[in-house]
Length: 400
Ligand SMILES: Cc1cc2nc3c(=O)[nH]c(=O)nc-3n(C[C@H](O)[C@H](O)[C@H](O)COP(=O)(O)OP(=O)(O)OC[C@H]3O[C@@H](n4cnc5c(N)ncnc54)[C@H](O)[C@@H]3O)c2cc1C
Image (cartoon, rainbow, N blue to C red; front, side, top):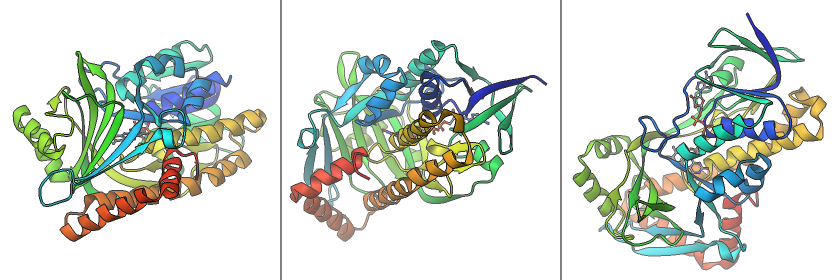
């Protein structure tokens, strides 16, 4: 059996794993990143990830450190305003609209939105520039054996890698997390999200719009124009059976349903991509580490897609890991480093998982009195400028 030795093995080449490989590769560590599923890097190819990621302000500095920002910026759509619309009255119509404007707290937008398939394309290209980083699509992690001084990872191609740190970025069912026996707490909502792209006649003007009625939010996030028309990415959360029914409708019926649900805020929406369906859960690992292993991203925490928190929390994980690794490279992956990582990240991750759980439950309610209560809550928060600003800063991750 061949053995390769590197500083870090990243298990998982989703958006989080590729970012981790770029971050640590750019910092000079030797990295191997493995993933059994080769990345799909074209929008209309079968299996492409049509979700988008809204990178919030604090992400920019990390992406710059990883040599990624210059590649991504030309494709990004600014997020200047987060608009929350309550459409929870008896008829599907906007009855309360509140705008949270980035200019209230900063001279920059809240963040920048990019399609996930494009992120994979640019991230893989960035890894290809670094001689100290090897990306092995088509190869997965099969076994993990650790001792105090190192980890040995067996791969699906029969080879093995010895490293000082394993970064588990292999998703919500993380094989590495299972191999090292870290338990998780999972909340199921019986909800699914439809993710797809639309075009619309009314420009979005860099406004991200979250429409609440029942079953979960319907969110439009700005994209650059598509085929000469204003375009947005949509995440539409619904009870599972309803989401599946919607995903199977013929296009004209589906468009009618989404126009009803979007209250025509940007005019009639036209479907501009395939529809993909994602199960929605909340999940948190009891610990964010094991011997020689750091859990990051969905391997450590999963949240419903509300307020663009998922991947941004993952970047928070990487920021802390990178700071610790750069402060003491000789301690990479040792017990002290990983316990510190856990202490710095777990309380914040726990707070965000709890907060988003509450928001998701509020958005799901269907009884009219509860929907009215939700609208009053939004109005009350908005009416107090200090509370409003604090909420915005917390959403960005600028305040814990
Ligand atoms: C509908 C929707 C919209 C979202 N929108 C946003 C947003 O706007 N902003 C935001 O911040 N977040 C958002 N999120 C969350 C965000 O998409 C996730 O946080 C992000 O994709 C995390 O991905 P990940 O890399 O941890 O996991 P995944 O994307 O699941 O990647 C895990 C990878 O591990 C690989 N893998 C599996 N088994 C193995 C193995 N044995 N060895 C090695 N690799 C393996 C898989 O093939 C996969 O590529 C959204 C989520 C959903 C569902």
